[in-house]
Length: 554
Image 1 (cartoon, rainbow, N blue to C red):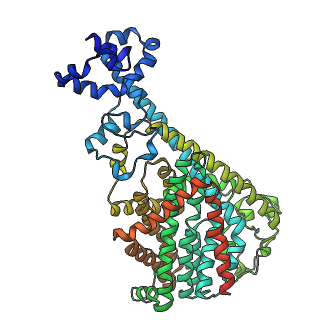
Image 2 (image 1 turned 90 degrees about the vertical axis):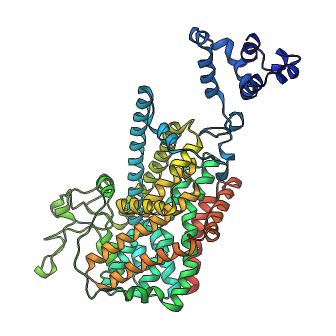
Image 3 (image 1 turned 180 degrees about the vertical axis):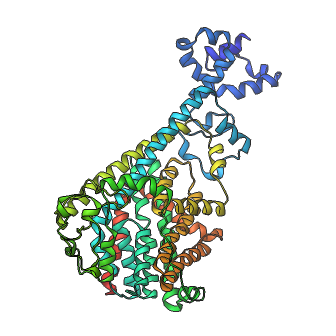
């Protein structure tokens, strides 16, 4: 047994212990297996043994050896099982088809079998993750409010006119990119159709464009992982797989709709004779996050709708903001005049512009000003936009750091087994989450950092985003129920069946599914050549190309 100790504690080369080792090991196959299993790790002990050996280690050398192996191995090449663990130096080199299969028993053990100290760390980590996740969602909500303040007037003007199909598609995309919310855009489009301000056919092209514009938010979020090239590559691929799917769907279904009007005829055959007047529904996440964000800045969506429907010519009609008796609350500033009763602005009711007060709490946000001009509101929106982006990236980096610490040392087999669910189940999960948060942008933005970390594979991100596409149509359907108009319901159904048609084309057949996946991976790899790829991509795809198409179509 002396030579075994020498191998582990003193000499990293077992040949120094056994000069005639080939003859010795030839006659002792059991010891040969033992040396083959452990010799890879032997050199690590020579570096640390003299300085770290304690009384406990001397009493139980086998236990201390096992612990040290786990603490120093940082590569799957050095592990007898060949398994990659989260945080390994060669974590990024492992391909999906190289990940071994784990059992659900192993997943349950990794998830639930811990000592008291480990449970304490898990609890602290979970609290930290929920804290940063809440403020990440808060930053997204504030970002959306800021974008509505800054781009609301322009978006309303874009949506106000009957246009040709190409212009309608581009306007829907630009309006959504400006106000950072496809849910808001589709709700406004449904309201415009319900008010007979635009036709059903124009509404169909607008919602197709809104589907493209909705993916700009999670693409911005992916830039929060720029500090790590490998994470940025995965995160950007995870974000742009949504873009590519939507662009591919539009590339096929838009000309098909122009030629055949199949969405119009399909949904027209499904319409009831009338639609009952429904109630507006707000998801639980919105109820948790929106009130806090509304204390900082609350956008007035009525301005966008009024400009789009032609009730007012421009945003100037809402300024200067006016509160009765100088009291800044909802009743004195934002309550609407009853024109049928002869009420007048400034006498019986106040007036608000792009920034309004909260009806539920009765309070006005911190950036609301009595007597504010349009320029003042733009400045407030710009300040909040910068603050929201700063908070978004800070919370994203903190959330990623917490998740990295929590997953450190966990085998990829376990992670992959836990997240590798059936595609239809993944779609159902994406749909359910989006219905709860009422925003596909929030769903995909929250999932993007997990793709960047490697916790969610790109193959799983695709069906999750497709589910988010389905879930976001629920907002339009709810808006149609409130509008009490059959045409509005038809546009909302067109949005739903447009997304379903895209899924049927691009997801069930493996060779078709590989098209958006390969495109997203190619864009991810492009970030290795330059970190400027994401911002250039956002500017070109979501603004430059649409503006060029809009100019050509007009």
